[in-house]
Image (cartoon, rainbow over all chains, first blue to last red; front, side, top):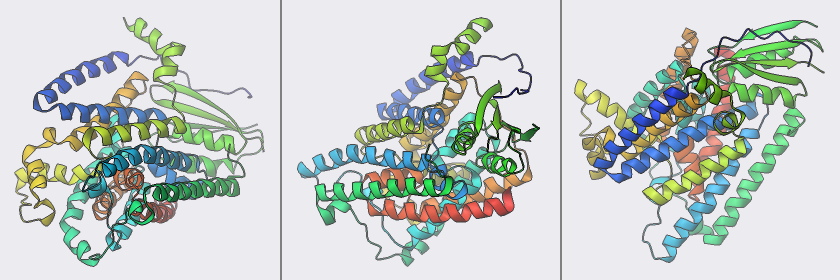
Length: 221
Length: 75
Length: 182
């Protein structure tokens, strides 16, 4: 590269001491949570892991849906597809095992197999617009609050208020989507069939993502 | 061989990327754009975009959580 | 002491371990792994926004908000969560963990900096975007994590439909961003 004129470096400092103080604080906090319930300690550790991973990899679900439109890049989109594919394998075993054991309700289904109706369509589009404007979705907003963004503190506050507003209006939206079906793939294709359908969809999405970036940017490097 | 500076300090994703993309169009081959950012995601997605475009890219951490991205237009 | 920490910060092995960004593929793999762990330990996959409405209730109840007649809070489980408070709710604690985990990562990398708000435009964007996400997430029963990542991994078609609507929303959002917020 040709010569460049970087801004003069200020004498850099290490923030490791603050990290250590935070770690000590977390140990005390974890200890306090343990007196309430060990499950809360697990929740804290899982959250810390998610926040740490999101920050270190700059993983941004928002960018996975936004960048294809803005620059044509699908590198994060493909990473999201990969994440779903890997999680699917783990989830499949947990659910299938429960099924074989004769579980009446398959784990995860009550919370995550949601009705497909008007409320889902409207909510999804609203969420899509909101995350692009605010520069981050739920996990991204939390992660950026931790990084010190004042803007994301505002967006978190209004995210929370918007949630309350949404809950308030939920009965109305539910009345519009009364017969909305909950579709769990294994109910329609059998367990291994569902896995095949899922991976066919993921594979198709992956190839479309590659094709899109080649078309828009001319390269997938 | 001109050098341009683009101040994106305090800007959240994807504004730095969009501004960089726009600014690069004004540059001649051989010119250098220095993008100043403090958004940790932009320090990954701006260089990645520029590399995909075939430009020369270099990143320098100038302060805690502040970077300068050097993009040399090559085509 | 100061120089000692600076030396660690600038150490090449330390930087590889605690500073240099992971690839997106590495991030995806780790997130998937921990999502499965979440399922194993808590009986449900990872979700984020489900707790946010409770956060609003806990904040606004002292100011006179009464949600006892709201159907969404009528269930016994919802009442119990509300009565228990923030620090007894696993999802809330996990969300707090995300904030603190990201803070820890930035501090270990010596990259923490308070990023001040730069313009009114940012305040408007954060307000409108935040409200839309909050409202939308309740209608869709989740966000990019619960409705998309965990939803699709649960072999639910709702996750795929949500992905399609997100793509449409992101398209509209990008247009708005280009036109009004740049």
